[in-house]
Image (cartoon, rainbow, N blue to C red; front, top):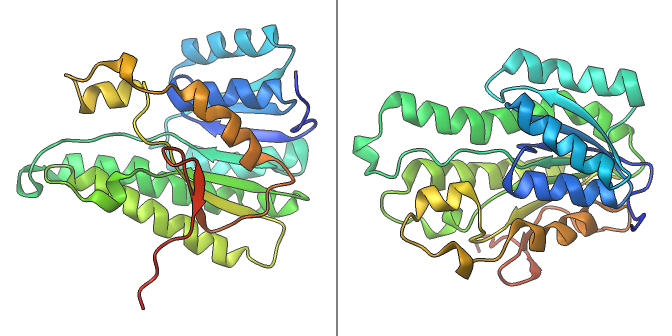
Length: 246
């Protein structure tokens, strides 16, 4: 068991499965106390059992990211208990409809943006004081190659992830003179439920796993990490600077 995150408090959204689950376990194994947020209580309890089996500790937060009031209360609750938040992994997201832009309903469009964009803005709004109270606050927002490919029929998801990148870069600029570091993470195609929904004919055994990504998230979450406002591209295995217009 490594201790690179010893004593740190890490909030993970979408912690019950996929990337969120793998990251929560990796953070716990590295010594962090994990605040695991997801909608499903049963899956959170299973995660808690696994974290305890590793010798780690967790606090479970059964919460839907569509619950704006619940997210608003999260930051003050963390401040009251720990006086800070050291790590935020904003992982949870939805795929939405794969359809021409003109065929997506307003309800489908709103759901994608409520979860992928607005919920992450609410998290930052609620957690900003707690992150700034940390000696080395670290924020990771999950993006996607879809934000740049802009493929046909992927409109709501692609556009929402482009907005997430703008959100992360803006927050990085606003925290540039503080110890907070903000990174975007492009995980690429991984063996997850969302990937299976998007690519039902794909052989999942050809894909890398969330557990392979997790050590990189631990590295970004560590106090030693110095980059901010950039993208960690897992397929390429390196940090990329956003392409700025001339």
